[in-house]
Amino acid sequence: MDNEHIERARLVERIEKLRRERRAVILAHNYQPGEVQDIADFCGDSLDLSRRAAGTDAEVIVFCGVHFMAETAALLSPQKTVLLPDLRAGCPMADMADAATLRERRARHPDALVVTYVNSTAEVKAASDICCTSANAARVVESLPAERRIIFVPDQHLGDFVARKTGRELILWEGFCPTHRRIRLEDIEQRRREHPGAEVLVHPECLREVVEAADGVLSTGGIIRRAAESPAQTIIVGTESGILHRLRRENPGKTFVAATEKAVCPNMKLTTLEKIAEALEKNQHVVRVPENVAAPARRALEKMLRVS
Image (cartoon, rainbow, N blue to C red; front, side, top):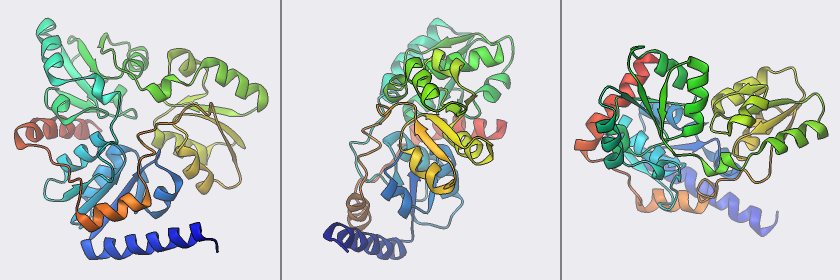
């Protein structure tokens, strides 16, 4: 065993010890580095992970993801300590919406309801009527009164997908995911030429032309489920490349190909085993949401959960 593997084994052992001592649960988003996913108690998308954590008897949640995800966990588990291994792990799309601008937009459209994607800050959720995920966005929109217009925040591409799927008029925010925007139609076409007969699964945060060229448009959880069920032996995946680790681990008989090697979120790659161990050891980077923000943000999430 080389030094790198010895050091990794020591880190894993240290994390295991700290996890038991702190009564902690470690959550890893599907886009996290493979070694982080491998030591997590649960892997999944941001909301599913937060709900799982809320249902455990853990006292500490280590959220291996980005800041808005840790905030969501704190909203749903206010009695637990939520740790983010690296405070620099933000989300560019979440940063494209702020509560003050949303309030101004609402003032310009007083008849409209606000549907906010969970990829947003707690303050923006608090200024919204209801939240949604990429998996349930269409269902949430369809649950709202047909006569009401809808402001959809912050991802314009997910909003465009939902508007076309539901036939509802949506006022789209100008936000987007830089990682998913790097996936282009020519990437899909090139991969299809390289892998004839492959199934193409993409995330709805992708550009419209990429969505229209795909065989399936699904959330990360949906991609994972479809990959397991699909008769296709080769699947082209149009989302952040971290998901390939889990897909390959759970489906060893199939081939998974990234739509493009450029679909990498640098913020998702900030988490390391060393940072997880330090967070547990030092109780550092606690994520809290002030109650005046948490209460209305939690209501928006709870409304979504009732629809789901």
